[in-house]
Image (cartoon, rainbow, N blue to C red; front, side):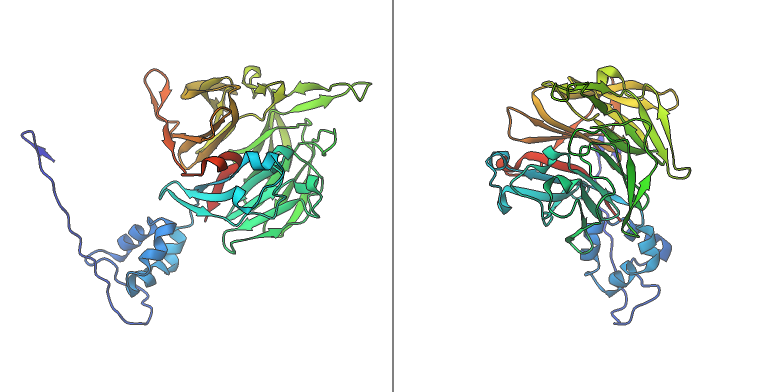
Length: 402
């Protein structure tokens, strides 16, 4: 508060009462004196999950209040964390990765705390991301899909944050790699990719996490290899990708037909609908003669994309089926970048970069709705304090905590 150019500092002291010390659970424990119980519940509901265990140790009344069902119902909204796996690329190329050569981590953006996960039982000597393995999170679970290439007797794994362990899932109906995947409701959706040989796929299926089984879905309209998937308006979108042709001579270099379309699956009608010209031709990333997935992410039901070979960020207008420029990253996304990912966590857009000439993983974060004058987005950099040798990005995504 300012008066006459002078600033007055007001110190507020709040006295917290721990209520009764009775060992019996109170149906309406007193948490904050002179505050109605429903206000106290709203205050406790705002505690982040990592702080609830500590707060429950303050006293019995706080513990009883935090165990109250009404407060647990108030905590039903999901929190979104970052999951990431990094490894030592030099050791991977030598074919001798060990336990200390890779990490699986959970990062809470609110508390900036990092939690180490038990690594999955993968073949450590390979960089499995290069073989089209995909990951997705849904309701406290992290799924690793497409492991059939390694012939380990399984193609899908699941990490549960409740049991803190990995389990083997039933096989997908179709062996596939370099496919698209997304999570909606109780289902993990997978679509497209290829069959580990040379056949591009248009098939789709979904995993029911409650029944623990795969369900075959209608085929997509287009066969799409190396495509991207996301959830928009409660529908499963698949965008981009390509179809591979070999002609009469199977041993010749293949030709590629790039898809500049998208299509979405409606879980209610079980029908795919084509969206023409959804992915602009100049957005398609091609690096050193190879192809990459469309770099897209959804933040609060709005779709964003990075245009490769520039630092431009675009927002998709579904009503007009067109993209509009909203700002820049500030770092060029070109052939000097070995890997680039785009994520939507909470209300923020996360850009994950790994340059070829640097060993550090660069993480840039901004609120895409706050565009400054001159068409610039205010990005800030986040440090995960990783060992430099373990900074090569393998998997990353949004971990949904309920």
